[in-house]
Length: 276
Image (cartoon, rainbow, N blue to C red; front, top):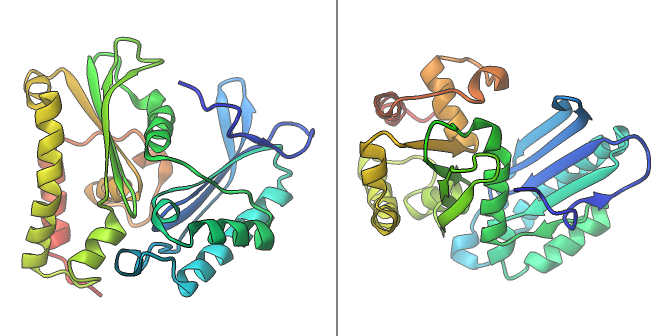
């Protein structure tokens, strides 16, 4: 499963330096890498919380303040791409820009003010990219895998057949309109009470149950023949808390394994914390 060249915009003809930019509902992320014999070597990275989708659920539009925050982060990305003389780039926007009435106007503003050409991808394309990005972490000993990507405005669930682990088949997928921004805004904002948290769980559980029943996931996991693989800042935060890390350490978090009880313990620990 490879990223189509249609997405990769050639910038110049210098030695190959690639960049990937993901503008989501909550975060703006950039990765700059150089190809090597064994894969890629990261030469620069950037991540900033911009909350582009703030208030979108209530108004149907991207707010001026949210767009300004995103533009500020994208200017940093543009400078890094120029400094490293990026030769090919993939720049995507997701749920917030898909849903917003003024999404097209925002994309045009990004182009005018930063020079970055953003492509608004579909939920299916987002699922495909999620699978492509996690291929090295798929366990060839498992027959199936459930990949989940928790974003700011949506969550993708992808059920895979791993008969060919290098090019897994997507059996089923769905995009739930639940993410860290949309859920928090729907259920009370920053400070979440125990009752609001319980309502969040119920809200998400219904859609998860539908997907589970559709694909009979319980049967596969009960016999130990399936792997769960999570992506995004939500998942890496859970792993970091489980490991007791004071700061995010990609080398320790990427590819880390957690048991179900570990996730339950971390969830209880986080929900017991006081907001500061």
